[in-house]
Length: 179
Figure (cartoon, one colour):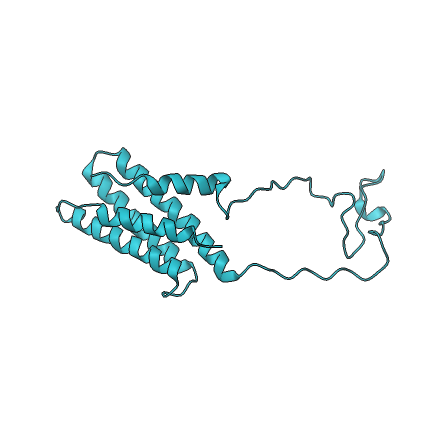
């Protein structure tokens, strides 16, 4: 029995920066405010000969007008939760599939499936999404199918991963609609 590698490719692309939820900026710095950054309060420009930043006189940060109000978030929190669940669950699916396919020891495969069930159920419960949410519902189908696969394998049956593979693919497709 071999698990479908399809979700592995999608999750790898998402985690490598090909998805809408990947980060594309690296934050650089040394712990001080960069020159030209406007702040609402004066900041030290550096250290004087004493090495004590408090002994230097602060330099005002540009204009004397009132501070700029903080921007309001424009991202829908439900969308953020969906994206996080998609990334976490797809990464879990990739890990489960890779570990399962790599080992040929049935007991080890069963342990991998059991840990996978726990991981995916944890992601779902901590997602903060209601049970009726379409992304959470698609993720729950993956968890249900993986649980069935695990139970069948752990009781000595001849498990078939088809339901789990189909559910993983459907979850992957559902995640591509999150915007």
